[in-house]
Length: 626
Image (cartoon, rainbow, N blue to C red):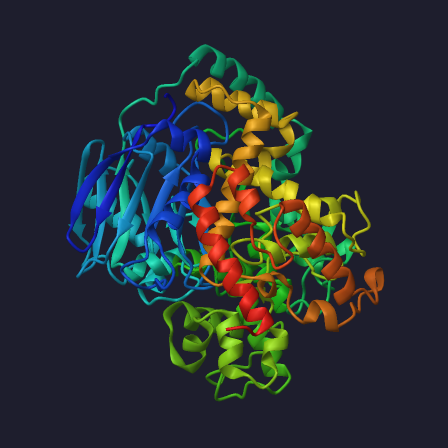
């Protein structure tokens, strides 16, 4: 079995015992890597009743089989735990060089259990692995931590994945930063890391990763790199994802003013085109990437001069138009704060936008927002609220650090209607009412409101379906997208490359050339379906049901005011029809529970037995029986 290192680390932070464990071929074939390994880990290690901040919650780092090889856009890793934000399946994926280094140290992943009694970090130096004191790093920003560890180890090439003060203080949207500009962003993995007193993971790898067919992989990788330099990725190379600002504004699907609107009157001022002319300092690529999408902004003048931050569409929109902010300097500063203090930019923007709407409507008083003039468009107040959130400072900071779902429940007074989330995860930068297939995909996602689980927004934005309608057929579109994305996130490769593969068979070819394990596209899709079902089983174990697969009230109760999509909203009837279509396409019950028949088809025998018990229990609750 090539490509894989064939082993992973099991680190007990309580006892400080570190054990090397073997990775068997059955695990590789059935769950591929990345997302698949994470689903298997969470299901096996986190039983019902384990709280996210408990030492019994695990924190798992996994690479894919392609990391460390010449396969393009493959230097990615994923981190998994029960999410402190949603209570369900939590994970995030990051790029950069960390995954490449970990694989070159000859490890496929790391599973952390327990909790250290003092701040610590893990140092991996090929076969030599040790826990080191991190007391001097506690309280430091992610960037400072990375630099200090490199200085301590005397090696500027060491890769570091670290949390900032937000993760240490259990801010529920805490993330993990590596290579300064790359983050494991969503579902609060940095907060779980903080709950374990784990400040960082540092890696130095010096070995080569063996592949099954070096010549074949080289030839195919060169072909793929040529495609990656073609028209399919031109937008990402030139403008980066901020190019979506004007595209989405034109379609009326650009979330503005806390999703009240789908257009922003100052869109030109925060567009990718404007940003390229006025703020982009450099464009960089991750390890083994021919695209180079990372546009790094620098503020050259004004009160935020010297600010540097990597800018993508989601960050730009959620800390910009979603908060009514039109100042690129302030938005760049906001992203830098998020990256250094360690929080998810998407969630942070949605949380602050909720607070702004509540303040403007008189739900939150001046005292409750610590005296800030927290109106839409007030960039200074946005930045102050963001700092408070990251550091849990004051009444406002402690409230916002809980995430928008919990914050709205704490405040009450009707504020729940303005909390834009699903399962507790804040919605991404795609309007709900003018991209309806996308909304279904967001809502059924296993990790909460998430554009990265199915890519369902694409059929809406491209006009492949009527984006202002929903029907039964959209369920299969979302289901198929989830299975494909499960493969992409298990291999793990960049989703910006998804359009260069002619078919799933080419993904299977890449896998076979690397590992030597014969795999067809059909078999790979079956693995994707297995992985997604296993992740869903984890959620069922922790209480998920149909009620958790709906968008927030604003999607149903308010019409869009923008001219291009005026009057658009979702009816309960059309949404229920589409949701039924999704469950039917999945082979699940109409309550969103995988059937024993489906799980057995996928080879998930023990899961079929356990989930059957949850199904019976749920049916008894619905009927009121005892």
